[in-house]
Image (cartoon, rainbow, N blue to C red; front, side, top):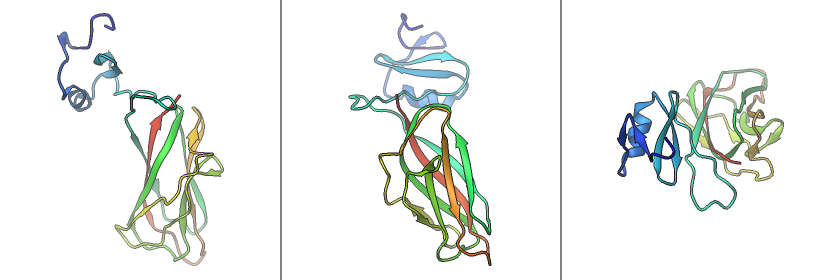
Length: 171
């Protein structure tokens, strides 16, 4: 299909809504090219890889990590399939209140990417990373994206919630 131009099920794909149509469909794999969006194979949408100092942008992806209540420190790990760069992180508590000194941190393996975010809020509280360490925010393919939950009191559990880590694919 690369030589035929962007096509979707036999018709030329044109216009500003092409990417939205591709994302809504969800049954085929797409690739962004300089000429538009083209079908690669059945599967999911594949975001482009963003090179350093690229003149074209990439599509951010959000990785969701469930955080269970714990009375001890715990790690929630995701093995990443592609090389990624963490560009933002936030979390939402979904139940229970943690202790005043409980925290969560996003890490590249054992190296912290974000600062420690307070995880002591009540249900529906949102916390956001205040810093991102550029020495560790690139995670190689097969590496570990880790959300560390630090329970700083053994007398009660941390809050439950979801961490949302925004990333882009990089070379």
